[in-house]
Image 1 (spheres, rainbow, N blue to C red):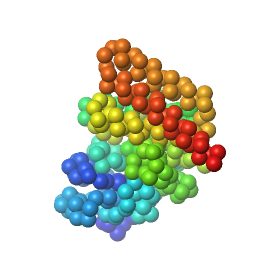
Image 2: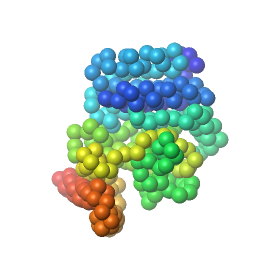
Image 3: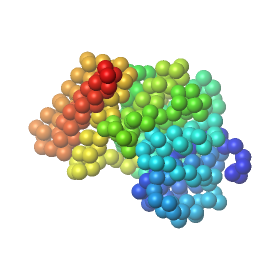
Image 4: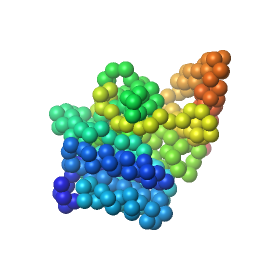
Length: 290
């Protein structure tokens, strides 16, 4: 399709420091069976870094290249202002799409006008679930199951919903000027539900993403950064102390079990996650009381 035509789908991708992986995503988008989409790239690299990556795809993909200051939620909000499509997606720069994904999602939304949001799973190249645990069956998304109903890579929605709720909370997410380096997509979904959106999880909607690290420095950093965002979202959305206690107990039990079996990487990760969740929850509580 021409750059002048209004696309049905806007794919909003924020990127920094991942040129090789971004090229993998671009290749998967060029292979889509439907070209009824635009790619809005929000660039947080030094000027010129992405030029050799994007240029080979300029004739085959409708690309809008804009810039933003650091911060994932900040970048997404900048990108939302440039999205023209009636449908939105938020692919990470290190994910990649199956060839028929865009076409299938356009059909799914067209066939279900009452559905505002669809989510699915992320799986690695071998088809194993990645980036978390997922619901075992299709379901309507609710406050009680939202944590297992996908992540931002597999979040697809009508653009009107994003405008209705005002985009992403810039105090949450990677690069935020706070300790809360995750939770922005769950907060986004919860606010959408509070505003009357109808959301559905489909296990057969798949986006590819490599496994996230658990062991080593990468796993430690992920636990420390992401757990506080999780705890803050629990507090912001009124999950309460009993729910917090249950989630911390589950992580702590997994840490203990892993330690007894000699899996010290998982034990450390889960212990850090439990501690970080409490820190994030208490920090949000203090702010709410201020």
